[in-house]
Length: 162
Image (cartoon, rainbow, N blue to C red; front, side):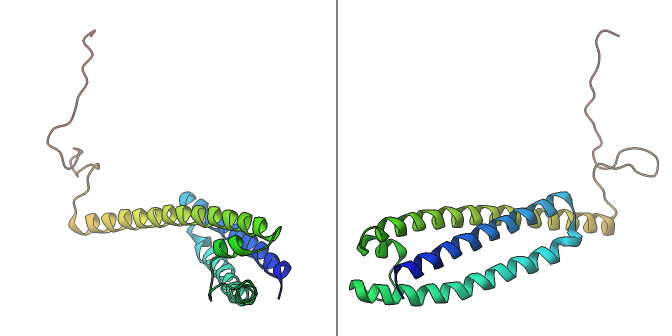
């Protein structure tokens, strides 16, 4: 395996991470719009992309090991270490791959955390609604006699011009 092969694998990883970012944004859209019908499908699509990334990672590790051996590096070097030791123009190309992949992974983590928070807050709202329906207390609603439930006092605005 050579530098060209590793670079091709890195481009493929970039494409898959970009696709994963797109799928995560689709998932966020589905969560925000309440279209939960499609959540299992997008979860499956995300899992397919993750499986492709896992397979690619094994191939990339093997290619990296061979190149690292030729460059006199320790086993399992990082892409940054490889970039520091590779001859031109590969050193620059590996540096650019490293920066691009790092940016994509950062975006993915941020979006994944945001999606997780949205799902957790949605589950919390559902749990609160179920709890209030069991206990019979509902804040912000009306009782049988037409009065608001919960607070004994409410804020009132008076118009002094009347």
